[in-house]
Length: 429
Image 1: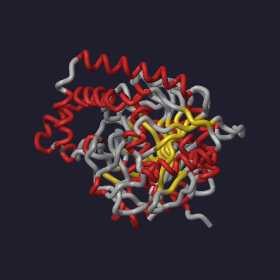
Image 2: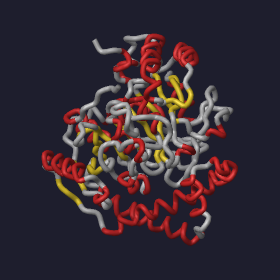
Image 3: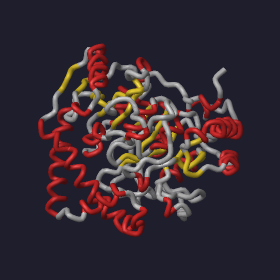
């Protein structure tokens, strides 16, 4: 019999188990393994159990780990900054308010890096405790992989959902830009900030996004979703697939390149190429992210003084050298890439590419390279990381499945089809 903590979100909300029993099973799992994994920035077992027992709604009793840049009125939200350890929001973010309204409860606030940028937190990878879980949604990914929660909320401005999901061997889903609301979420760059989710299968990811999606009057970029993503997983038609070698493919490890090519060959799918100008994506993203970072967090970094990591201070200095012309030029180039990508991706439900350079690096080597998510974050395209491959050390390597901006339903259909046939997911440690 499957342990309660190992059940899918869909099984947990089926009514077979009470919210109290669900909470107790996950709290016991956390008690056993959290001292090693260190997924949570804030965790209180009594608080979580009380919240579970108040649950009512379609997601009643569902435990959700929430990244510590997403505001919670009943728990601190410190943005990964020691200086803000006692920061207590006055109200829930829209995401958390929607979770609670549906009957889910926040089991804990998941570790992020300082201001969710660059500097790794204390969390380790449950698959191998010597390795990074990725960043900046490190605690969210690790919590799902360790069985602390069946689903979690994260965010991605560059690669902070796709990369940790790949390293931790779980599903990560970054919906199209504007699908999920960002009110009450730490802003890096309003032009490219994306909330997203972690889960152990595609259907759970779709279930959670369905509960969270919809226009938000305080987020001008957030729009109403069209149709249920969970319903899209019941479509039985074979998806239209292709694959591409990313413009930055040389930054992937040789074993990763070989495994992705072999997987595409097994699927017998078309290979597509992107125009050379897509190699500008990294430089464009650097301008937009840095400018957004300076605008939204410059005062915080200044207030940190020497407490701010060197890389944060360097990013701020660079941002303050940018001109309005630099910024507008980056926007124009971004829009050009989006139009080109829309045309190349539109014929397919999913195009497969790298989710990360390879297996999770050792923690001493940092949180890994986000480059394989950069283009898709920049243009607002939906992206899944799917645990379909393994590396030379037997650790997970995700395959990234992307689609044209707004084509989330077709992508979810394809991701579910691939997951059901090729995925391998287990809980660790």
